[in-house]
Image (cartoon, rainbow, N blue to C red; front, side):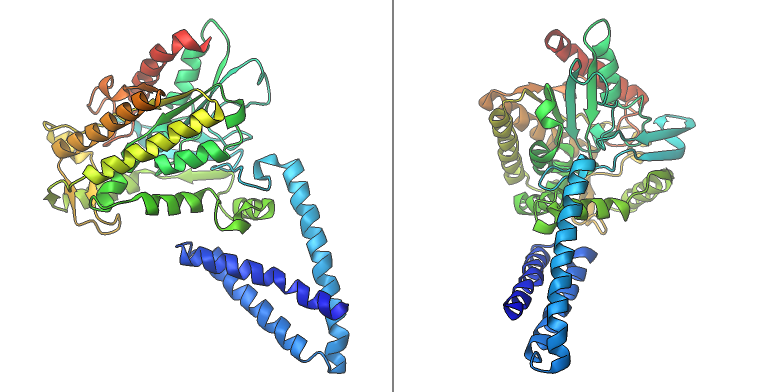
Length: 423
């Protein structure tokens, strides 16, 4: 019996090894997958060697102790997994996942992006659910809850908590009526593939009265990085990794908590200036190249937006798709051109060139147009924000990201659309 139990325990490292190898083959080649492959190989190899030597008296005495230790470890892990899920539900076992650590605080020192010509310190914080927004511990039932999903133009990393457009939108819609809480779940770099997983995994989706998607900039960026080639498979792989859909062990509460404890700390100071200086210098030193053929990319983008619409219908949630405004246009001034750093073609680390602002405006317009067409066909609400936001350095500090004034204009435009149906 003890021999069979000993052999049975080797199924644990075998399962983890298979999952880790599959993850590695699918492109998840970080330290976690590599470390697990090495650890489980050692575990299996050592376990099989001991089993082969089981008739030796010393080894025979060891096998029951090893089996018992593994069983005790499994029981302790199950208890810990359950305890984390009950005590800290933001790390609960399963697909539900937050993208930011709870109670995070990042200070941007000497930030000149939020207010042009002025350096200020701004703060980026998250609440108990890891979202950038008001706490939901009080008055949750009485409030109208909006979940703002998007990339960096929703996240508004360079802006203070109070001036990011989702926060301003909540304040505008709360005036003289039912309190409105806008929870900002924007994450830099997220595409429509990530937004689909956000719908499926975010713990607040069930309670949200409205879900907004400001979408398109990163989808266009991905299409340019792939030079117009199909990107669905790569965006799917990235979303799988980012949301812990695969590998399977990333759904564990223990794994999620360990990832948090070894990752971002609760207090950080961040100098954002150097990043933009480096990116803008890279663009200035590169060459302008023609826009790749993006017809296939636009078609793929429409398919991803359609899947978002279908998911919203399946969840029976009111969703609002929002087009992406950009600074890009054909007649930018020298100062405006110098503020750009996006629009690169090829890999981010070593692009083969950059697209002119005029052609980028054309490309973004095609993506926005496709979003509106799919929204009409799928009977999902859409708001053409791109048509409402002016393109200048009062509104943007780079290609796509809003200053305080830009965030105010965005919030007021969306509030004007939503106000008749929120209260």
